[in-house]
Length: 271
Image (cartoon, rainbow, N blue to C red):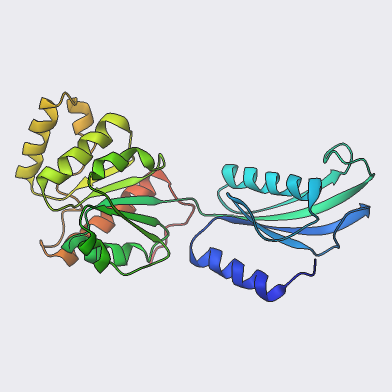
């Protein structure tokens, strides 16, 4: 198969644009028989082969497996040079060796689930998708979800009972509860507190609303310790109560919590 530089570059740029962790594999050397030529490349994500080929068959299967394991165990940008014996390491009958160069690009994943597509979400989400994160917005109101501009990092879900989706998110998901009111936030919050150990839970509202929420959580049998694991009011204590400044406050708290936990591989910059 002829290596298509333009196609490879387009796919690579798309992965970078979408903040998808990936590995670029390059076949550097061949000794013996291999169904590719030196310089062959492939792009691999956690879902497997995305584009290109480094040989097909057992050689490529071994390279894909190695790349996926590297994504699971390495953070940041890492390079690895490996040499495999085709018989002992790859399981092929022919003799020889192959040398691969793996470039691992994995900042880490930062999933954010936002329950509610109202006025604050309409400001908050367009700002969030500019960051290295993936946003899912859930609401029972299709008209409000439709107001959110489409974006590759945004997934919109319209469902009658938003709390039913709490268990569908990865373990490191940050939860932001900004739905149309207390009655819709509470079931989602109770589901999170009873089924997960979320790294971040923020609930929009006042200190008075927080007191009411905690009283009702106690009535549901949720411990005081669990009740201390969410922020209400959401965000840092800055700004006013406009959707824009609530959004800035919430994003500041999300980033602060992300950095405390080391969710992403990055260096804090000093300006």
